Length: 332
Image 1 (cartoon, helix red, strand yellow):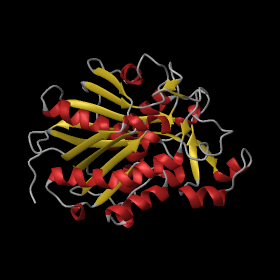
Image 2 (cartoon, rainbow, N blue to C red; image 1 turned 120 degrees about the vertical axis):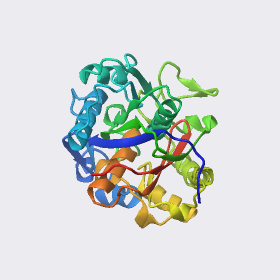
Image 3 (cartoon, helix red, strand yellow; image 1 turned 120 degrees about the horizontal axis):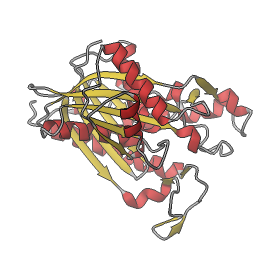
């Protein structure tokens, strides 16, 4: 089937970075009351990467872009917009994007951080497509990066087993032809915000007092229930807008929150798990970085190839969701 969605934006390169330090499930056994078997059976996670004490989200972003530049022989000095999806910026302000601009010597670019938590990278890709297709920009650097370990309470065994640090970057450029983007969908359910949060200036939400610890607080059961019941519906909406059926998708790349959650989403949507990519086994839940990390893993393993239709779907705190159907055009 055809599709009338207009896109003049083409993804031309991808790069990733994860910190050197590995924190395994066996390491966590020494820190909290848990076990490797318990963690892996419930989450599918074996280990995660942890940023060094002096290593922050900006550092991860720069390293991911440098990987992109090296692998695809790309220059970024003429990028005219930098979008960084993160919920763990180095500072409240200035933005990570502005620090990336300075560190990479990009002279004439807008710079903006976006916080859509675990859906942030997909939101940022949608914004890049809009900016380029509208004619406002020609070359956009999109980065999803997190240092979740710096906002995780390592005394809380319900959350410390989940999160890791990492970054993924894509270069999105103007094309005269139909672009990489075949359809998009985004939505939010703000009334569920109290199920997953980290406090800032306010210590209450919707009249409810929050745990003002500065760390991530999650009602895992409610988030799980919301995701597995609503993400399959969102996937269908992406496909309806594209003019393609779900069976036409070559690879599904959901946010790598929890393997049990991904399995349930695949079961409810009817999408085969063997055509689904995730990054959580060795990197944990890296929030905005999880989707580019998973897609990159699929590329390196020789699974994702140019011409494949790839469905990206992010979901997380907000509660927010965003999906994109792409025609993957990047050649290794």
